[in-house]
Image 1 (tube, helix red, strand yellow):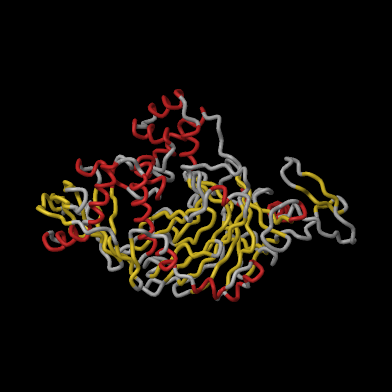
Image 2 (image 1 turned 90 degrees about the vertical axis):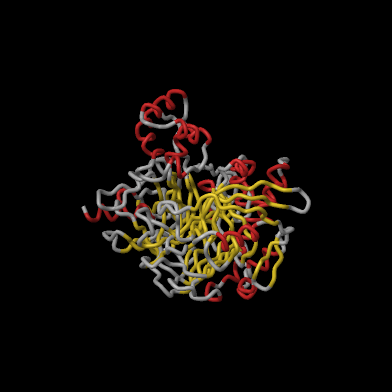
Length: 549
């Protein structure tokens, strides 16, 4: 029985598409698997294992695998799933370019394939993907602790026929925290595949209360630039609970993200790198694609509000309305109505190659990929970003707003926010204020809304709420603005205005919002946005002088 179990597990890791030599020196005979999805090589009637991925200690939850040096170096990786029977033959393969598979360098690459319904569902108390609206095939690296510095590199290839499943989340690599900052596992950052776009960086930034706030940043590749081509990621990091931590990310030889400060929460025990295919919030895609009058009636019968149904029809990301995970409204109505569904999740195939880790960039040996570590390490995001910004000017390591200054006149405080439920540690001088924004070229704009100063020393940031009548010209652009500049731009009705920052990501995000309004045909919204942005310093001066903490 043990031998049979081991053979079943090993079959998951077999390199079905590599024709190596048989023990007697003859060539193996190639045939097609029973389901027609991959090649099988046989020596004298037995499957060849000359290039199989070997598993060590299969009885352990995180069973290590031996990846060929052709595809990976440095770190050791394992399959960290409790329910071993969920391993599928097609889920993970080492494939060869002579069989038509894409390869970044050398002769081989790693092929992941995830099909509808392939989730990991062990009994309690273990984590259960099947009961939390998730599916995955991933390999996990070794644990990294506070103070660890290093480099990771990997390359991804996505076939042209790859189907987007937005608003389900699709993650293609992550640095994962243990334990998570929330009951649901949390990660330092994720590499996402977004709808009708390229890669997006989902990053969690530490706040003053030692929790994490999630942001999304589009990494600048279109769907066509991303598909049917190899894209190379490079990460340099120091995991730290102190201010000496940092993260830098390059995509195709260009730095795209840079962060300095704490990279671990006080409760984080360790971090580890994971790569493969991970999709979560599956019910969002399935509910949206299968929505019909009959399904909608089922939703209503099972407690879905008009707002839930409307957001499902739109197929948008809506944490507040649809939720995420086992207890979400989206998953609840899916479980009640899925018997009516005809459309399933598409099969996803993703290739990885040259998965490398080392203490230094030099030790990654990137020469064969045509990268030079000196050139990479000399890049700074703030320098690269400054040339792409029209509303900021760089002074040393600081980006300053160059728009005309606007005065906040006749100011008055209407109501202070003192409810513990709605007053967060990073929200300073929070209140409803009223006044006018006196511009040089567009007259005076009335201004009344709930505002606060964002705490922190890295930037001068005003945050306003867009539900008030004087701000509604901005609110009506929420959906299209978030499509262009990121799903969190106007989250919970808050919109940020930055006049000074040493964070190039923040400057880029602000530039994106400015460009969006400038490109619209909505003169009223553009002039209001320019007035608030130009008046950021004046409004903040008023708050700091006249509004209590």
